[in-house]
Length: 140
Image 1 (spheres, rainbow, N blue to C red):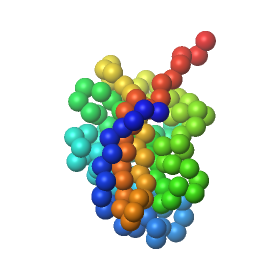
Image 2: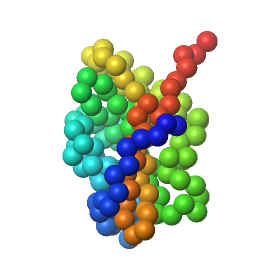
Image 3: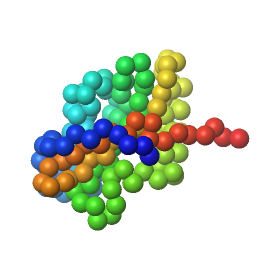
């Protein structure tokens, strides 16, 4: 993955540590991510888009580009960084779901796959957006 934009000292995830399970923490992180992306100039098109192959956390437009964004949040680095938590298998599921979304839409412009990592550092949350985080090869 490539380096992205780091914005420290953001306090949008107050309920993350109090969430009762992984899904609840994910909802808190995705809500904060949507707000952070909107503040950064993105237009949210869809959240939690589900298709048979998988789910896309956020679909948003940045200018003329449609972005399929995976959100990963970590309260600690015990299990690795948030940005490391999107293995190739997950990337393929996201890409397949994106293909279904695109087939059902009228979108003809450029697209990309981004990852927004959210990590707790020194008591604050740091958002790190990696644009073009991965590419998907066409099947042979």
